[in-house]
Image 1: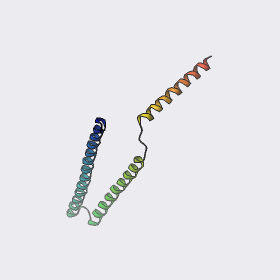
Image 2: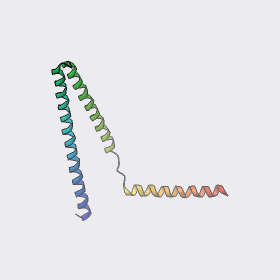
Image 3: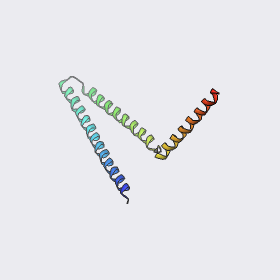
Image 4: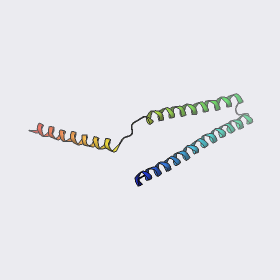
Length: 114
C-alpha cells in the first residue's frame, strides 16, 4: 500500500471513529432527555399539577414527534447518500466550461461593438 493510501486509510479511520463517538453521544443524550422528560412528568403528576393521563399523552406526543424527525432525517440521508460524489475532474471540467463560455461572451461583446 502506498503512503498516500495509508494516509487516506488513517483519515477514514479517524473520521469513522469521530463519527461513531458523536453518534453514540447523540444516542446517549436522546436517552437521557427521554429519561429526564419522564421524571419531570412524574414529578408534575405527584404534585397534582398534571393528570397522569395527560402526562402519558404528552410524553407519547413528544416521543412520536422525535421519531418522526428521526425518520425524516434518515430519509434525507438516504437521498443524499445515493448522490454521486464530485471529483476534481468534475470541477476542472466545469472550470474549463466556464472559461470557454466567458471567452465566447467576450467575442460576442466585441462583435456587437463593431
